[in-house]
Length: 198
Image (cartoon, rainbow, N blue to C red; front, top):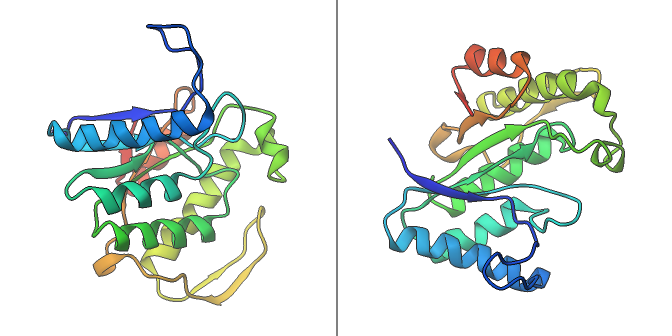
C-alpha cells in the first residue's frame, strides 16, 4: 500500500485568510507540497493537468521533472494526464524522458477530462471522448512496448516504422492508472491492460 497526496493546482482563495495566491505562488506551493511529502515519508506526489482557470498545472512533466531533481524516493504521478487532448506519441516520449530523469519513480494516471471547452482548444470534440481515450491509449501502450510501430487510427495521422524515444527505462513503461468517475469503458480498458483504476 502507498500513501500520497495530489493537487489539481487550483488558484483559489486560501481558506485560512481568504487571499488568492498568484499563479507563481501557487506553483511554488505545489513544489513545496511535494518536497514536504517526501520529508514526512509519503510515497507519492501527483499533479493534475488543466488548461483553464483557475488551474495552473498545464505541463505536468515540467513540474514533475523539477520535483524529480529535488527528491530522491518520492514516486511522481499525474492526476490526471489528458489522454484525449494530448498526442499519444508526445505522452510516450515525455513520460519516458521523465522516467529516465526520475530514475524510474514515475506513474501516470490517464483521464479523458470533463471540461468541454478544452477539447476544441486541442482540435478535438468532447463527444469523441471515450473513443479518443480508448484509441489513444491503445497507441500509447504499443509505443512503449514495441520498438517499431505501424499505426492507423481514426484520430491521428498514421505512423510508419515509428520508434518512440527515449524508450522506457529498462524496457519497463511507467505504471498506468486509468481515472474515471462515470465511464464503464475506461474501467474495462484498465482491466484489459492489467492497469490500475482510480
